[in-house]
Image: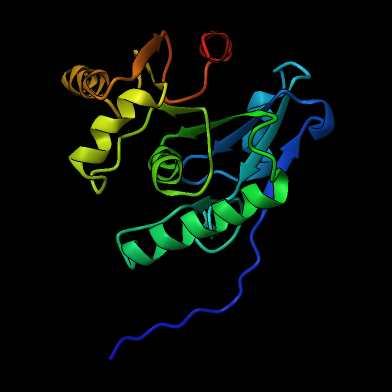
Length: 208
């Protein structure tokens, strides 16, 4: 019989910037097979007003075989509901550790690729009081009820997708964009693939 129990676990995250002088805390959740310490470098050109926090997925693994480069993921189909709950719980604790005064600073959650679904669940079901959700080249999690999705109209949500993203074929591009627009998200596109685009990121953040 398969059983489970709860115990302590150590989580990792990377930071960049100066919290004491920042006007915005930007949480950035990486994609499948990435690590926080490298993913956070993609945001190095943001201004001094941003304090960047990159949580790392709970599950680390070798990207090729049994040695070499290591990546992390947020979950798989195995024990999915447990991982969803654990992710939200530890991200809530991280936010409390970073900054307990939600009224003094803006908070934005950005989820890239696989990290987008976790970002959305945290934004909507977590204890964090974030001002904006940015879902970048990701899919809105199907486990959020339609009633909850419709409330996203009030969330200042943003969806970003590259025009040459191999994970979104031409027809899926339109379906994805239409779906996010129906949820009240502002949508952005850029000439590029499955990656973050510095100019588009700057534009999105300026429109916050």
